[in-house]
Picture 1 (cartoon, rainbow, N blue to C red):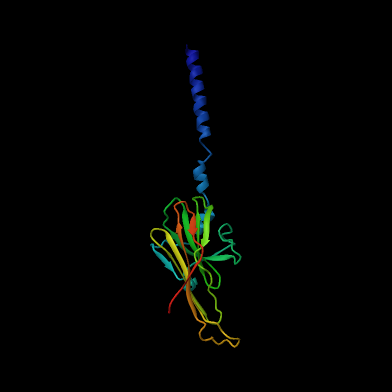
Picture 2 (picture 1 turned 45 degrees about the horizontal axis):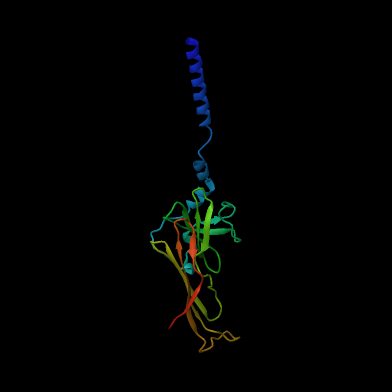
Length: 203
């Protein structure tokens, strides 16, 4: 009887040791997925604004935000220019991170990117029309708003007057119009954005 009890005790101890070994040295998959030091460092450069958030792209003060380089953040700065400006991290409507950075072009334009908890990209879209320039007779104003319900509106209001070869504006050729897109930041982290719509304006 004593030998049987000892054998049973030995079996129980062995099972306890095996169970303990199987639970050590291996982090849960969800925890391992969330460990991304580069992403954690990257998103700390962005500030949390209240919604609605409105931006006039070509009036963005480049000195207000940090310059984030491809050398420091190779997983998150992938554009040809090799840098972006930090901007805003949005309080989201789902289990993801949304960062609005500014990409260099003729002026700094807002670019919205979403990531899962581990820093993997879900979606990314430029929240601007991107048609501004400095041609003769051409003026424009880029505008963007993300509302409290996560709906998105972006537009470019343009005034265009044709110029002759000497650079003089030609009377009677003025056009005044707005080009815009509507969209939505979804709870999945996907970004919906419509095609461009052009609407003529009266002076």
